[in-house]
Length: 195
Image (cartoon, rainbow, N blue to C red; front, side):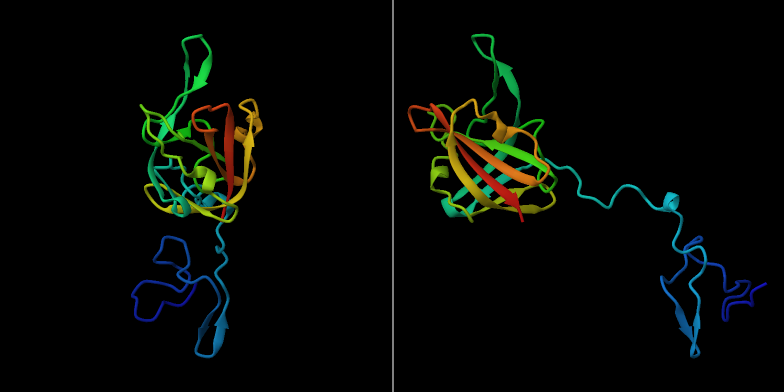
């Protein structure tokens, strides 16, 4: 039996006031001698919490692109059926749209965001997006933090170039807008990587 802990009646040196978890994580030096780490440390893998240590999935709430003075709210958008019976992406009036089913800020995946270059009924949140250059910062804001992405590429593609909205292993953001203004035949893609 271990000797009683000095100053604590009824306690021995092997008990822990933390319910089985030792109060220290390494060897203890006591009166010039090293005491060993208690045997129950580290705890078995089953005793460790499995949740709470990662980044929580949170939807984007705002998009900031300082180089082009964009500060816009972000709203979720999905797909709808148009007048011809075709599935089409919804648009976000006077805001940036976060395409549901795509990535979320700060986590691996492709966070797809879209906005208008000009629309009389839905605004022009991305009017200056063609002025963005490689290296510019894009900040995606959630309720808990700001996520910084840096632009890695800008290109114009045809509407059928869907590979730019497909999932990715790396955490990236893809901003999409119809171009040229007034014609809307192509898509401007701005791709950014999480810093």
